[in-house]
Image (cartoon, rainbow, N blue to C red; front, side, top):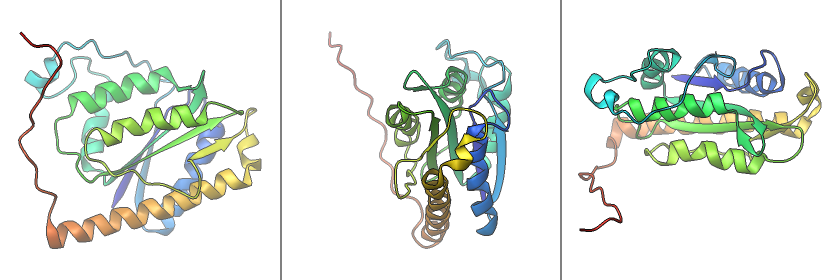
Length: 206
């Protein structure tokens, strides 16, 4: 099994990396492969709603987003981690997620998602909710922990002092591992849930 971890921090080896690495240690113990991709320091522009991905099967901007697409498709789980900026995720990460989720048309049903947020103090809950919405719009179960998935720290390395936050990360990784393994067994015995044809509606009526 494999988990793709997207680190949305522009800082390598900062507090978000500390949180992510805590997850990776537990995934290794659970014999789950992880790949960590640093996104926050990359040049990734936002979606322009051109619709080219529906014709070409990939985003019109050929950057890291298109590189992530096959990794996401092959993964059993996706972790999205971000520092908190103004009670929101890093804008570079959001640009990547908008394009990644919109331009990839493979079935994401029952891939397990989890979000991790890191802040000095406030804004964690709002950012946590923001990131989880990517999972819940496309049939991805969301892994939970013993608390909301947040770690606190401002200066580089301070997250190492957040004992509860790091424990929350370890619990999250164990719960996510259990959920992915359980879903894999469920697929073997029962298959995926039945899908109905999508019935798109909107609020404009002629």
